[in-house]
Image (cartoon, rainbow, N blue to C red; front, side, top):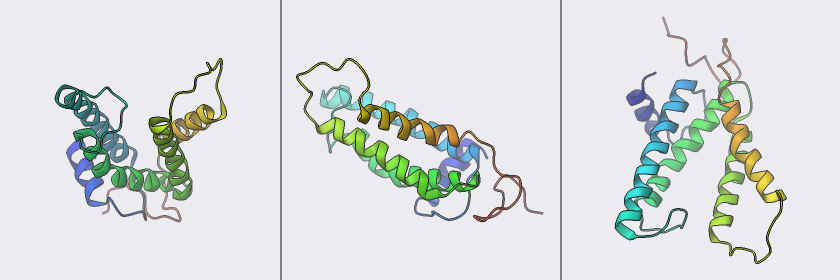
Amino acid sequence: MGPIQAIKSGFSKAFEFSGRSSRSEFWWFNLFTFVFGILFVVIDTKIFGHPYGRFNIVSLSSVFFLITVSPLLALGFRRFQDVGLSGNLSLILMLIGYGIFFYNSFSQPSASVSTGFDLVEIAHLIATYCPLIICLFPSQNKPNQYGPNPTEVPS
């Protein structure tokens, strides 16, 4: 699947949590959201003057996030199913990651200096990188309980 088709598919299946998604569909859509997310943060900084990392509901990057969060969650869900895992695991990990991100965005910095990782940082690392690593796995070659292999061309 090419980049344009993956982006169209990501948005058209934004609320579809059944079935499977190929690696190319998942990674092309993620690349699209990464590149445009960075672009909108840069534009927000130039227009609104707020520093990176501050949540501003009227910013372009915030609107872009709200538009792409459902397709990203659905793609991750279907991608986990493609490798044979429950899509619910992807939602749990992603929601933990988003929750910790928003918690850190709105919480006040501590007056004490941390000398190492705390449990929140460890949970954030696990919730962020485990789904990405799992999404690198190849599709199961045969149809699984979630549907046919998305990389096979129907005859």
